[in-house]
Image (spheres, one colour):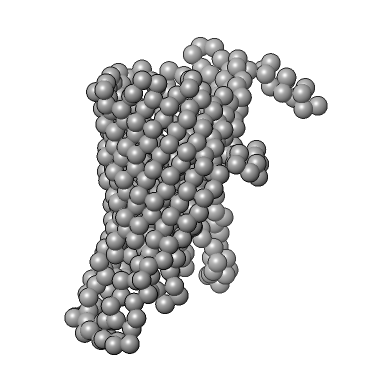
Length: 422
């Protein structure tokens, strides 16, 4: 029955393709923390010395593993196109993540991409789960393609991997559920014949149930535990690619959560600008990114106690690739800073505000292409954290004692692996 079903699909399409990537690496991670306390604490801005405090030195956690997706994300997918005539085409794309290191994750879901689309001279209309416009710049203008220990810190800080990579918020920066992909989306892509100009816009439904009633009691009861405004995403990306130059700007707004009855909505607004230029001997990459975890109030709020409106996450990336025979040298430097927009409480005017958390990362790697489909690769990277930031290259989280004695400092990692695409 399965064979007949596949044959039926194939006969109804102009083309159906099975494709994928299997990527495995021997990877190592080492994350070190230090006790930076000197026995001095501050109470209302005034120092208090603890003469009995004993500095605990440093502590390191490390891990070695057979990992996957060090160069390209391992995946298995199906895609197909039917020519409808008159320049129209219908297409589908189903792509599943796989963990080939242990085989535990297979085609259980198509959460990498699951779309159906209609395209023609007008462009393409695409429905389903797909990359958000704002994520494209993070991955396209990263020499490491947001994979492995070399992935840029903009991706690390905005992403979901809080346990492995030390991002501040679960579910993405500011609780953003749609950092890299959005479900339930409608996307429109400009046609490819615009002299190098390209672009897309996306709207993703939140699919929350709403209630309208003349009864205030019924309405309040319904919305007591309901997040009726969470889950929506709207964004766009526009760029120009011609010859060696590629440049694009993107903006997106994701509704991360809300307290409906209180009239409070949490949004993550993201802006980024990326570019690359291929000189031949070298190709340069760059990106600027700014995301803000913004709180919107239906009624004016007044608060004088050390708080601003949300947290800003600002990131930079510069990178380079250098072709060397059958190989490619890759290198990048990225940095991020968290600004919590704090202000001094008038009741404690001598209080010292915490410094902004910062991190920077240097990564370098080499890819040797054995063929068009198979490559060997090696990558090493190092992250330096300041003021309490805890971003890593992957693996275990920083060790931090319950009393907060240890402060995350440096994280190093390496990948040595093989990638085969089919």
